[in-house]
Image 1 (cartoon, rainbow over the protein chains, first blue to last red):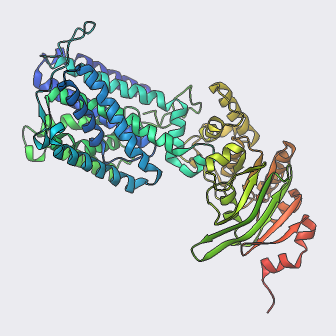
Image 2: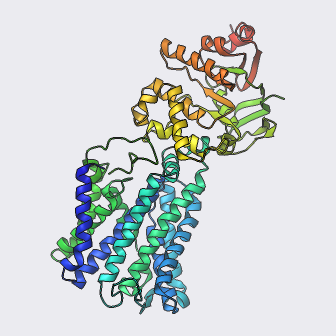
Image 3: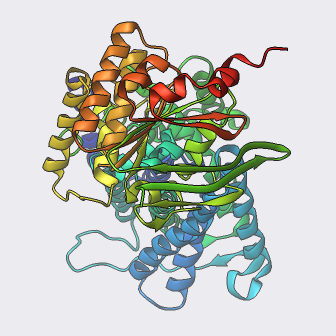
Length: 328
Length: 242
C-alpha cells in the first residue's frame, strides 16, 4: 500500500477507535456506526469469497444462519458469547454446504444458486414456527454478559457492541491479510483465474472453494450474531433479506475487488452516507448511494475506489511482501 | 513397459469421433513427436492424457499405474505436466506466482519450507530466461515469454513426462531455435517428452520417434526420417490426388 494509503487508513482507524467518546457515547450514532462496521465485515467476507473466484448473491443466508443460531442459543440460557461463536460456526457450515455446489456450478449459475439458498432458509424460518418463531421471529434476545477482563458495559450501553463490531471487522481484515500472503491466497487466486490450469498444477479446486465459502460464512455468521444481539430481535424477512446479500456485493465492488481495505471503507462511506445524509432528509432516496456506486463502478471505475490509487510496486515473493491483489 | 501407454483410446463428441482406437507408447527418456493436420485429434489426445477429458473407450497407464479417468490434479501429482498451444497463465498474477503454484501444490517432492519453494520458483524462471520478469503481471508478457512461462509452469510440478503442445508455434526463427535448445535441455535433465509441433523441422531435430495422427487414427509411427518420407503422411497433410 502506498504511504498515503497507510496514513489515510491509520486516520480512519484512529477515528473509529475514538468515535464513542467523541460522539459523547450517543446511542443512536453508536448503533449506526456499529451497523456500518458490521456491513464492513460482511463486505470484506464477501470480498474474501470473491478472491477465490466465487460470486455470492446469498450472503444473507450466512448472516441469517448466524443470527438465528445466536438468538436460539442465547434464548436457551447458554452464554451469549457461546451463542456468537456458534453463530459463526453455523454460518461457516451453511456456507460450506452451498460451496459444495461449486463442484457443478460457477459464475452466474452459482450466484443464482446462492440466491435460491437464501430463499430456502427464509422459507424454513417462516414455516418452522416451533423453532424459529415463524414470520414473527424471536424477541427478547439476551444481551452479551460482562466479561471480567473486558471493561465494557455490554448490557446497557451501545459502546460494548460498537467495539465488538470494530473487533470483528479488524479480525476479518487481519485474516484476509494473512490469506493474501499465504499458500491459501495462492490457491484462491489460481482457482479464481484459471481453475482448469490450476488443477493441472496439482490444485484440487473444490476443497479450496469450499474453504473460501466456509471462511466467508464464518465472518458473516459472526456479524449476524452480533447484529441480532444489538437489535434483540430476529425475524426471517429482516435477516434473510436481499439487503444483506446485495449491499456487501455493492460495497466490495465499489471499494475494490480483491483489495484488503477497499470493501470495508466503502461499506462505512456508503452506509453512513445513506443513513446520515439521505435518510433524514429524503428517506425515499436513502438507497441512492448504493445505486450510484454500482453505476460508477460499471461505467467509470472497474477497479472500484482502489483503482484511483497509484499502482503499488509489485512484490513477487508471496510470504514476504504483499501481492498485487492485496495491496490497496 | 513404456512410461506412458494408451490402448484403444477413443473419444466421441456427440456424433463426431475425434479419436478412433489410438494406441500409443512413450518410452522413458524419449522425445516423441506427434504430428497431424488441424482437427486430427492431437490436442484431444493430450486433453485425455492430462485428465481434462475422459476417453469414451480405452485405457491409459503411466509408470505402471492405471490413470484412465483420473482427474487433472491426480495426474499432475503422478508426474505428468503439460503446456498449452495458446498459453494459459494466471494473467492477473505475477510471473513468479504463476510458477509458485505448481511448486507449492505438487505432492511429489513436496517442499515444505516457503523459502525453499520461492528459491525453486526463481530457479525455474531463470531456466526459461524469465528471471527479470518475475514481478511482472503475466498478461504483460509477449507471446514468446508466455510460452516460456508455460514451460516453467509445467516444470514446476517436477514431472517425469512433459506433454508439450506446440511450444514453437507462432515464434520467430530465433524463438524456434530457442525452443530446440529447450528440448535439448529437458532431454538432458532426463525428462520424457511427448510433443505436438506443427513444424516438421523442429521435430525432425529433437524427436527420437514420430507419431502421425490423421482423422483420429495413428497413420505412421517410426523414426523421423522414416515417418517424414512416408506417403501416408504426405497424403494426410496434402490430401489425395483425384
